[in-house]
Length: 256
Image (cartoon, rainbow, N blue to C red; front, top):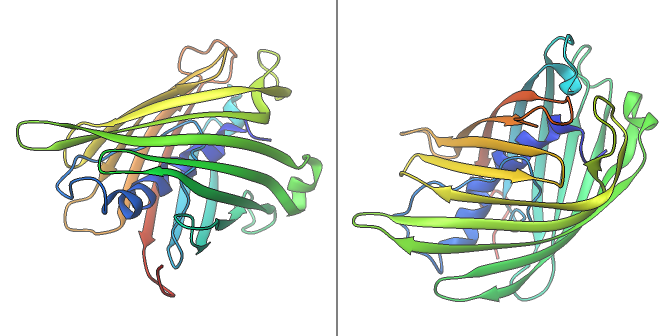
């Protein structure tokens, strides 16, 4: 389900490379690190871009008393979302004990709605829990549509990118405190680059607030670390810490 909070760290993990790829032609290169935690974005990997990420969540499922849980995700981008339509395919491994005993695919199509000197806006449609195996078979196939944008503010020595996202999903909102039950609804988020290596983001739904920090690692190109807390006020009794480490690389099999 979309609001199974453990997947949100993987969204943040891919953000730095995805945004950098599309922003480099329209935003200043010497910019602060921007990230998005806790909400999906319409940005996808460009053609030839790939990423791998691992997430540790505590407690599992956001349920107090559960042990920690681990997840893996791998993704690749195809097509041209600037002039036509781009696609991203993600393989999500939701079972790590034993490894690969549960998982699914996420398929996303996206297109640029606006590309200018100071603004990039994308729209996307995604379907999750496709071709599930293991415990993932117990979940339904879900969907969301999203519009996301990236702009910038000039600082004294650094450009500060700002990312926003707004979407509607089939399972975006937790419906009952302490339960995994979800319903259709809106989600939104905003992230800002604070320094060259640190970004901050907040996101939420009508009854849940999330907040996270994204870090670049000096000297390790393509490596990102994200730490965040879902349901940070524990309003839905699903408060959960998440730590994600990711590696991403562009032009692995040719760009556009």
